Image 1 (cartoon, rainbow, N blue to C red):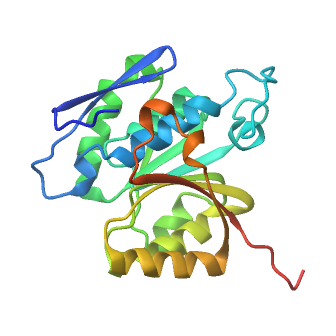
Image 2: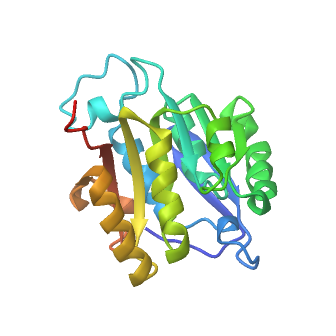
Length: 229
């Protein structure tokens, strides 16, 4: 697998090809295509059923079956849109792509650029993780919450975990592409998440063989059940 500083990233998703423009020279991390988003997208491509009748031996069938029932989804820190657009092509039709306002022009540019492939105008929303009004405004809860490479500033970790908890439904899942960026943020993130979520790490051999970046992992989070119930 090769990651590149090229201005345009080509991402093959089954029979479709996404063309994603990035700007590595900007001051916002969201305008670059990071490995986590590609690793997460290609993991889902590997295991997501291609149709409701797909019944091969698949340990992730129930997790990634986006055809049998309509699932509401939201992506946090969408950036250039690589993961979110890929999930849409893989059957997750009802999805909102979110990020902070300075990143929105890059995201909307890529959505417009790929509209012939996507076949529709995808929904976007400005969302700051500590803004409760914006969180309420996207109408949670969601069946699927997607995030890739979103843990890099210690000060934002609490807001991120709070947003994840507020957005995911009690029986929903969070699909996280993760790479260590800051030891301090990493430590705090996992400490906070372990209090709220049941965490499953996807074995590295289950990642897409061409997108198994040694420093990047995929996790599945589910809310812990309330012991008082």
